[in-house]
Length: 284
Image (cartoon, rainbow, N blue to C red; front, side):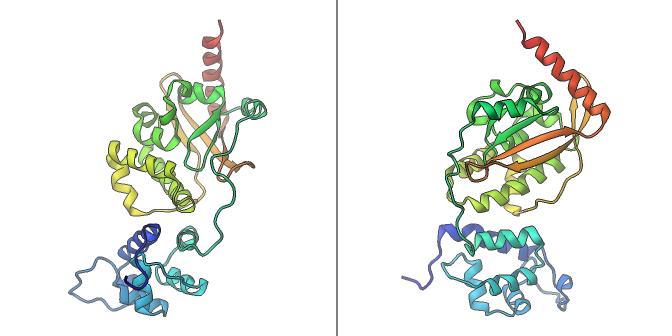
């Protein structure tokens, strides 16, 4: 049996390191540029040299081998690969250099009080799991984005709707930018919940139906950078600007409340008109 065998649990870490190494060129890190380079980006030995760590240990880490590395080792790798704050945090999570998330990620139960809370918001609002399965939502979300109760339960997921629902895609003027931002945030949660089959099943389904998802997922982008107002378009009232706020809820790991507040008075008026029309149509 080989020393420090490769493990499936470390494959995400291995792929992440390769993707970060491939995006750099020698000039980015003040190394001399040579004419003959068969490897895209930096070589492993160049990363190890920049980080001041042993080449063997870095190679094993990038190969997904079951080795233990110190916080200092990871800090040096993060510095050598020019990782930003979110990427550095992602590296530490993937390397299992922190305690596992506590609690049951699937144990959250929506109570009547949660529904009453959602109804109080002026804009669309919903409660979702870490993998973006929607557990509860308000009537304003139905009015603005379409009736979620008509969506099959297995597709009632914000990432699925973003990539696989034509109506949702058509309602977002800057779809590619918004989709990539959502995917980058989802990737962080995927790293925190490795082994959760709900994530794996969703990823497999999206790879089968979306060419964009299939192309972007291997790029390993991770970010939680603040975003500006999100733009949505409705054939009934036109374009709206909404500001997203996300809050974690107690009761299950990763469960969050997501609220879209109108960014200006025009958007507030258009949302109010959609909600009024929706509720009028729902009354007997």
